Image (cartoon, rainbow, N blue to C red; front, side):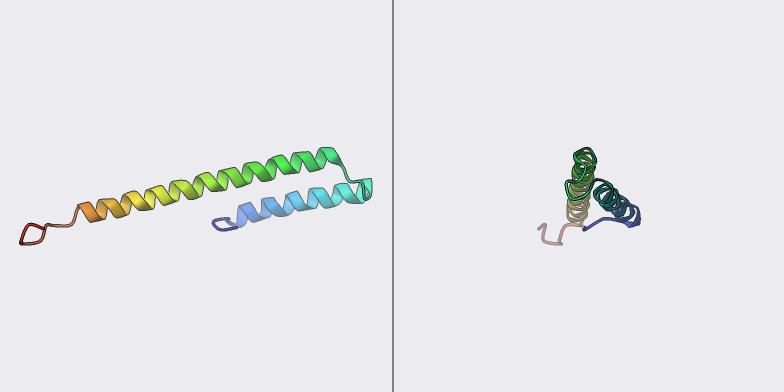
Length: 78
């Protein structure tokens, strides 16, 4: 859940609700179509979140590198 905002959590809630509604209508056997669709959406959400987290890590590393490289040299040249 790290990095999820309000919109992402609302989307997760909607996915859970879709599965619960399918179970309430189809009984314990569930609805394989709904479950497959929700699984695909969950995987997409996780992949998008992983890509966002990686981009944020890369941006933070680049910013840190830029700060380190832009420091003035010490008086003795080091």
